[in-house]
Each structure stands twice: as C-alpha cells, then as structure tokens.
Length: 402
Image (cartoon, rainbow, N blue to C red; front, side, top):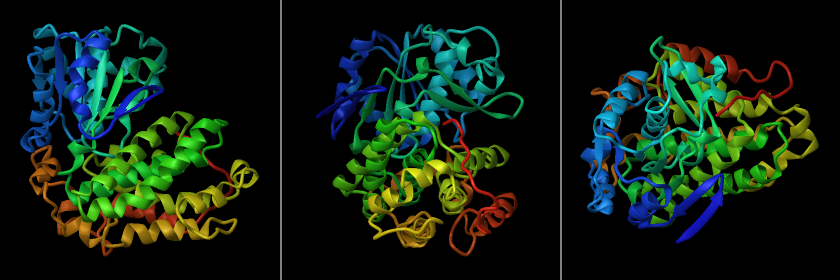
C-alpha cells in the first residue's frame, strides 16, 4: 500500500477501499452521505464501498447526473441534512466527486451556490466550515479526488468552477479494483482526460517544478498504458498505472491548465452530453501547436521533454511530432475514437449503465452521432475543431483554471 501526502492524503493500491472506516475515523466522519450515480450502483461497485463501511451508519444519494447540477446538489444537500450526516464519501467518477464538493458547500454555507463560484469572486467565501469529504474514484481520468475545484451547472445554466483549498478531499482512496469493469469507451475517454491534464499543465507557463515533474511522470504512465487498459479492462497493471496517471495529472494541474480545457469546458457547457475527456482529445493536437512559440515552451525545452515522455525520438519547434502522435493515438483501435473503445466489451460490460446516467445514451454511443473517426459529432464542436485544426494564428499559451 502506497501512502502519498501531497495536496492531500492518498491511499493507492488494489483493495484500498477497505480503508474507508479508518479514514472516516481519521477525518471525523461518523455518519457519511455517500454520493454516487445510478451506473455505479447498478454495476455493483457501490456495494463494494458500502461493504467496506461495515456497520458505520450512512445514507446514499445515487442520482448524480453526468454533468453535476445545482438542482442535484440541492437534492443531495436536503438528504444530507435530513439524515443528520456529518461528512461525505464520493464513490464514482468526477461527476460524483464534484457534486459532493457542491454539497460540502451548500450544507454548510448560506446563499445560492453561484455565490461561491470563482468567476463571481466566491472562492474566498468558501471557508473551513465545508463538510469533510473522502473521494473514492471509480474512473481514471478527472483526478477530482485530489483537486481543489469542482465544475457544476448552476441554476441559470452556466457551467461554473468552484475553487478552494477547503474543497480538497481529506483523503483520496484510489483503488484500481473499482475500475476493472469500466467499459472500453469510458476507459479511453477518461484516460485521455488524464493524459490531457498531465500534458497541458506541463505546458502551462506558471513556475512550479514539482508539479512539472509529477505531470511529466503521469504523462509517461498514462501514454504507456491507456491502450492496454482499453483493450483488456482486466489488466491490473494497466489499471493501476492509469489510476496513478489520473491522480498525478490533478496533483500537477494545481499549477494551471490552458486552451484545451478552456475550449472543452465551454463546449461541454453548450452540450453537456459531450464527454469532457473526448473533447480534450480532439483539441489537444491543435493546442500543442498553438503553444509552440510560448516563451516557457521554448526556454525550458518542454516539447523535447514531452516527446521523451511519450517515447518519441524528438520533436520540432512547432510540436508537429507530438501533435501527430496524439492524433494517431486518438485514431488507433484502443484510442478514444478507435474500434476497441467503440465496440470492445471487456468483462465489466455491465457498466454500460455509466453511459446512460441521465436515462439516455451519451452521444458517443450512437452511430448517428459519430464522425468518420468515431468521435462525437456536434455541429458546434466540429466548427471549433475545424477552426483549431488549421494551426496557430499567433504565438503564446493561455491558462485556465482546473
């Protein structure tokens, strides 16, 4: 069992979910609200977490939508208060963890949720009163289990970020066992989210050498194992490495992200059914080239270091080889647009419920919503993707919060 204390306490290994009772005791949770979604419950993964809790009293909210909303957070908060809970356990992907963070605010702070949004100047209003949270990720991608932020669609329809160090989960329990049944499509899409985090935060101009080191190592792990995890969901080594890459990406992106996430969050707000990780995969190649002339990229030889991490012999100053390698990964059979991701079914195909969290298939599951490369089809997304595929119009790099 590896114990890591950086940003927060992380327990990572197969079987780590068994540590839930001791972690509840450590952070002072005696009656948790378990936040999850219908897919995680249907797949039996929630049962594994609840079994680990044993006799500890708890309540369960299992209606997390694929993109967390203020309405869902309000419903969960009502249950939290009704059941006299004193903490939260998020069991699921980034959606469940982000929703739990919203509940941690709403259960302990007055006013509308948007009051605490970063863009509204609300970050300083989020205090140490937030309910304690333990995060148990069931996907390997978002890294929300070690992040200080959450993305929630508020009542007026905006998709807003909430950022505070008080929102970092007190413990992240990263058990790759919980990801063994993740379907190929979600394995590839969430894996590309992790890779995007590691790669984009390394390109961000802020000075943070520890974050750079963590992100670059996470990139190497994710790049080397995403295809194996997608092809064979029971590959325990690949699942462990992808869980680590996901966690490392989020540890590193406290430094900042960039244009990829600015674009994918904006487009995800326009059409919440589009998968965030797949959008990142679409935008990454163009943003790599857009960032090529940024001072920090040139001065610190960042493209050469990225190329080494993903096994390339080198890269030109324009980032051509890196961009092409990402495009090739996306299109390969085990990439997010490949046959294994679209059609493959591993031993955990029962978790197809994940793709219907809102009661309907996600667009990337429907042939009518695919383009020639198997990526989600959306007129607005295609328009933006075409625009960015033309390459950089000016030098520089942009930053975005996680």
